[in-house]
Length: 306
Image (cartoon, rainbow, N blue to C red; front, side, top):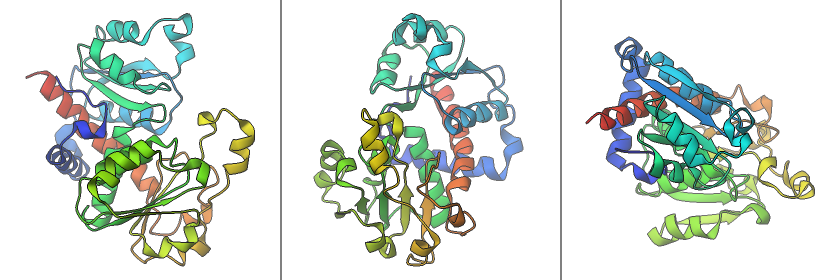
């Protein structure tokens, strides 16, 4: 049985196949309306979420399946001290597949060791967010047409941003990639991410604190928010939260075919004045998340039934 804990659990071929299925769902949704009849998805969200949880639920419902679950730890037996392993053991008896978000790194991996149904990591602390990365990849493929030979700028919170870490891992497998890492000193990409996916593969990269100095080089700009929930010190959060704001003035310096992605939610880091720019892809990106999760759910259920 296959789980999805880390984006690298999927081969490049598997990702390409899922993107192909997602594109077919977009073009022919009627073909998939009964694909998961009588199947149940449990969404176990020990941490708040809007897009990820709702897109999983919308995905399963549009496949003809059913959904159950909880949206915060306080509404589950975790509030009484129940372990993740015990919660999973119970929920496997009620569902055919589980999407799980947890604030602790590694919790979905622990869950997968106990599970008897496929586990999907819907985000674990500052570590991984593989289904957001699948969403990002589908967006890049639809908007740019390819993955090779792209200069990708990642801007904002690169230290705690699990979506950034997963995207770097995924894109490091394609040829002709260059990374531009844009962050304050305190929020730089962790060394383990840089060493594992960039330096070990001799991928060219540069680090800078100034977005305006590099925006003209980028094919993809991946904006992130500075995450209050990852900081132990409110003072540090307040000092750094508005360090990068994408404005129409900065967009005027960029390539005509730049695409701007953001995993959302947005706070202040992209001006609402940018929303009408055709290069702003983040709301389309959120929509694409439903389709790639539909493809993933079908794939994992199909493998579980082999």
